[in-house]
Length: 451
Image (cartoon, rainbow, N blue to C red; front, top):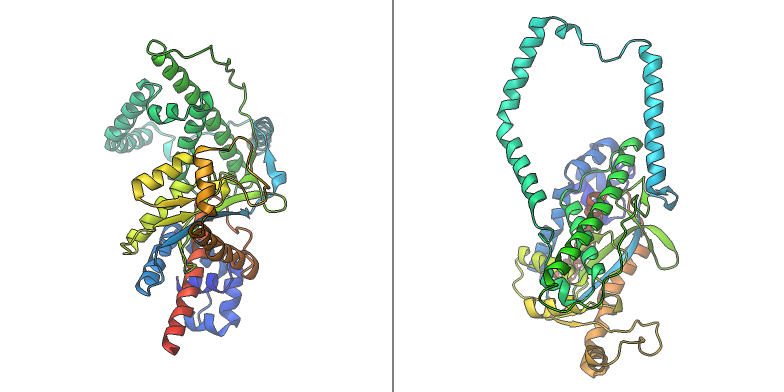
């Protein structure tokens, strides 16, 4: 554990580079006691303890809190695009994946024909060739099956209940209708729930290409199923409201696609194609919340390219991290750039957590106001940010979070993830931000001792 933390803090992230430093670097040899772990051992350790390594972020944040570095006055929320360990050329559509899976199945059949000849290839082994041996094996199998029968029945009952549920089950109809987004709002909510489920069931990306092809195909099918579910909820909601209020004209007809649309990367199915600073990349959207002392108090990874829906989740993640770190004071102001303008999230953060939100409705590159974004909340926010206090508070965004990203990507040379899959990428990002906090803590304590 210690050598991995020291390696990330000194910009060494490859398992082979860690092994080489354990042979050549004095500091690494002191940490390991002159023992040199094999690079495969280091890699397997990181994979095996992936979730625990991600939880170390909170432990380091607790140390920073004890040193007085986690004073949450104004916090800044921002994101940056980081390349995945995958190439955009590996993005394929559903039809191409289906053809590749069929081609692999044909190649497997031909290889089995060559290996087994006229035999089926599934003949019983010698220990099951007699009737008595088969009866004994069946007895053992039935005993094992009966031990899990109750659990299997419970799962079937749960699935049957889900199928029999109302189409609106799981949807916050009042919230969706309040935003008056029509069918698109229901489809967006269905995809949001699918993304949350993928995070709950996230696993490792297999090395086998055939397994990754099947994961990509499953993602296509899940996307289409989520869209159909969202459309079904929209139709059910419209039918419920038909007799209570006037709904206007008939909605535009919706025809679901015959095959799932879009593309999925077969090298890292969780990564997405998104626009970086200068070009499009295949990667992830790394999010962070930073305080005035440039301490990262929350670090998460998203597969959504835009920042529109990340304000509330990141603020809530920061509050959870602060609570676990033993910090009782909540942030008073949250600042973010124009990409985070989401009125629903801004209202939720202010109403539920008492945190004032400062977000300009216009991006810094735009000259003048955005067309249609005039009056009401837009004008109020522009006037607020034009005051001396508003300028002073919003200026802290560039002074806090921008240097963190600049130091991470330019000085520490971290602009690409080394691992694949959302779970592995989240652990890597939290290790990077945790090592940043460790460096800040080290410099603070050194300066305190000298003083």
